Image (cartoon, rainbow, N blue to C red):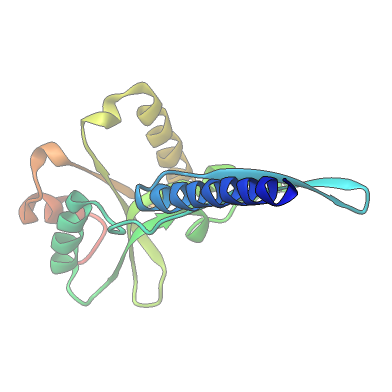
Length: 177
């Protein structure tokens, strides 16, 4: 009788294990976040370990950002360096005794640099979602930070299209193009 119970428990355990493996594989394929929290005792302290599974994005930039990037690069030629998705913390320092710099973890769509990597002008690509209150507030914070740092920001609206003349006209004020 003990052997039968062991076999039944073994079969059930096997199917439970298969179900867990299936869920984990299916979840990572469907980009579903799977979180398992384990509490471990280390030096009489509880430490939570978060097992979250990540998947690679299909592209670093959206299709719209790719089009703007291509046109911006064609306008500035090889006279300047254009980087997409630049955190403010990479181009601005906080001149304060305050340690916290959370506001500098916002991302700018593009930054144009000199050949010596001096930031010259930032570019934000805005669509209709930037009229929403939360986006507007975020945009104003970024604009204020860049203004304080004496770093110009150019806002390009998608409603005007990805047109070379429109973009060139907006950048001409800050760059020799």
